[in-house]
Image 1 (cartoon, rainbow, N blue to C red):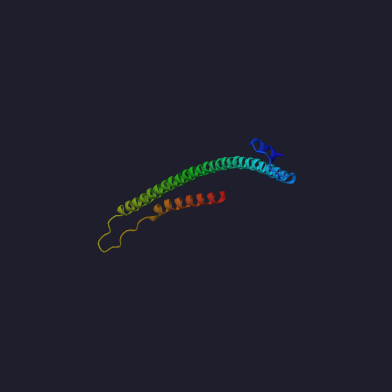
Image 2 (image 1 turned 90 degrees about the vertical axis):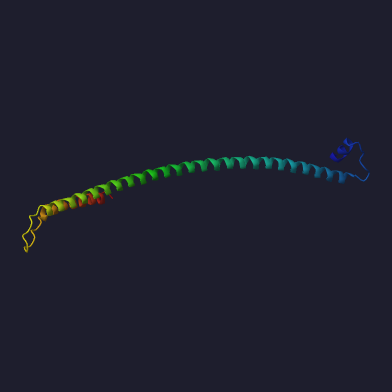
Length: 151
């Protein structure tokens, strides 16, 4: 039927050999081709729409992951800066303490009277020097014990 109509639209008559079974076969083939074309068109549009949807989701997830990584990076930089600052402060304190102890030893040695020739030099009173060192060591031990207790 479709084949006969198509030939009439083209201005031709159906040939004699176009019998009923061949006409039906051509009609089924044309209908199948039209259905296959519609299916391919729908499938193609759906695939393109699905791909666009997936791409948008992937880009959104990627952007969220990048934002989280940037936040973590900034936090790590702030932590590293705080640790560096604390280490520098501790280093300055240790240097100042060592210099003060060296000065205390120099003052203690300078305060000794000169020994007469041939006599043994006078002894330095190390109790005052060791008392301040002992108090510093005790304070450091208490701080270490307190930090261990917090863990």
